[in-house]
Image (cartoon, rainbow, N blue to C red; front, side, top):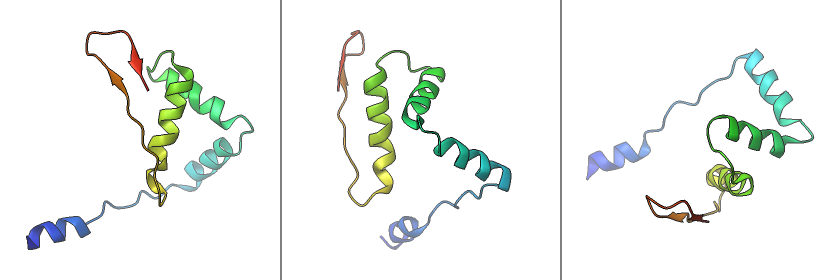
Length: 85
């Protein structure tokens, strides 16, 4: 039981950005069409179609850092072509 408490207290180290990485990240985040650019990048990594749902799920996933994170349920059969969000 004591080991579980110790494991729960351990945290992963926070990644420190270099000055160049920080400038690049800030420039990206200041874009007027940030959500559209983010959605396009999600598409480029392989999530094809479902533009609204993929952006919605991204926003839900990133809410984990908030005091009250959002939740989403996605249902779909393994062989089916339809998924419900």
